[in-house]
Length: 401
Image: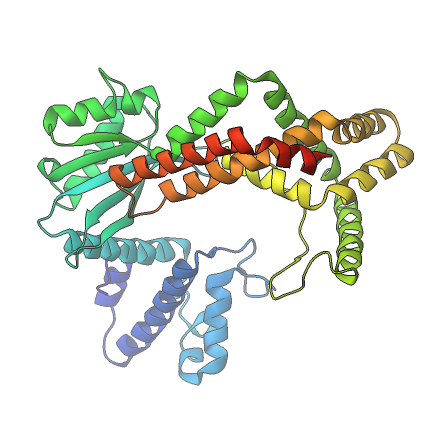
C-alpha cells in the first residue's frame, strides 16, 4: 500500500534504521484499521489518552499487538515519537480512504469493458445528514450476476440534477462510462423516478438503453401499505399492535418480566410435549417493534406477539394493578384490545397473508432475480393468496377460536 498525504511527507524526512521502525509502526496501524473495517467496528474512543481504560478499538488493538510482539511494542504508542505515532484520526481516515479506493479499483477491474447497472438509495447518518448509497450490478467474467456496494456520497441538495451529477462524478472518477449503463434501480420518489425531470429521465437522455426498474421490494412495500390504509380494520389493528408492544417494552423491568413468564410457558410446553427441543429452538426473545421504512418489519412484530401472547397478556394485567395514572390507562387499553376477538382474528389473518408477502419480499431482494423471475414470484404469490381466500377460512377461524 503506497503511503500518501501526511504519511508520505513523514517518510521523506527519515532514513536508515528509523525507516524500518516507521514502516513497522505504520504497518501495525494499517493491519488494525483493515481488520476493524472488515468487521464494521468503530475506530475512535471517547477518551484516547494514555491512561484511558477504553481508548477505542484502534489504540486497543495496537496495544494488544504490542503485548504479543516485543518488536512492535518497541515502536508503537508510548514508545513512538509524538509526531509520528500514525494513530491520529486523520491518519486513520487516510488509511481507510486508501483501502476503500483499492476496493473500488478492484470492482472496476472486475467490470472491465462490460456493461453495468446502478442501484441508488438514500441513507441517513447519525447526524441526520442525507447520503446517497451507490451499488453497481454487473455480470462477472465467470457469468455470475454480482452486486457490489461502491460509494456513499453526501448530498446537501436532493434535486434530480444534483443527484445525477453526483452519480456521474463517482462513475467518471473510475472511468465507468454512462454509455455502458444498461439499467437504473431507484425507489418511487419523484426526484428519482419522475417521468419528466427525475434522475432516471436525465440518464435516459444521455443513454437510451439505461432502462429504469423500480425496486421490486419497494413496490411491494407500497402495495402493502396502500392496501392496509384503505382497509380501516387492518390499519386499526396495526396501530393497536404498535401500542401494545410500546407499552410492554417501555422499560427494561417489563421486558425482563415478559421473558421470565415466556420462559416458564416454554418449560411447561416442553414438559407436556407440546413443542420440541433442539439446537437453536425456543430461544429467549422479546417483542419486536415495527420500523417506519420497511412494512416487512410488521410481520416480525406479528410473529413475536403470537409467540409471546400469553406472557404479554400477563404483563399487561400486572401493569393494570401496579401502575397509576396515564401508564395504567395505557396498560388497561392494551390489555382490553389484545383479548378481543377482532384483534386475535386480524392477528392470525395478517400472519397468514404476510407469510406469503414476506417470502415474496425476500425473493425480490436476491441478487439473481431478474424481471422474468420477479413476474414468476408474483404469480406464485397470487395463487397462494387466492388459495388462502378460497380454502383458508375454516382453518383460520378454528385457530382464532
